Length: 97
Image 1: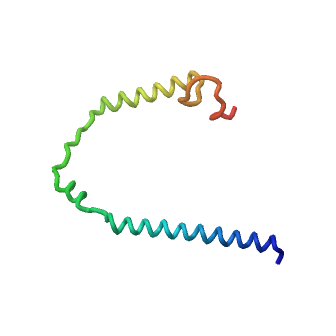
Image 2: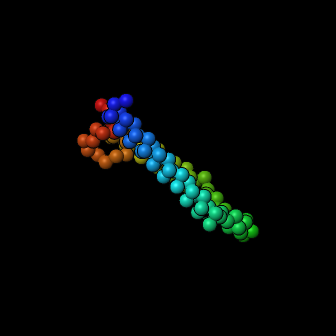
Image 3: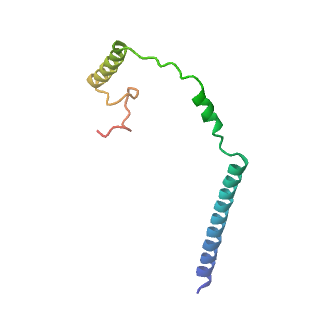
């Protein structure tokens, strides 16, 4: 083997070893933190014991107005010739014309 090839191979092996050792250290730190600070399931149990929150229903008339307003906005922008909701001007980044 030539000296350059051997040097390159040695650098590659050392780089891979350092990478996998660092990965192993990170995995060890994660397991250590999981052992020191375990998941607490009591918080979920407390939420179940509390009274259920009141559900507020929206009347269909309010929802229809919002949908109509959204449709009107989209139709207005299409009529104006703008392809999207971006600021008006010469911006061809998002369009391929």
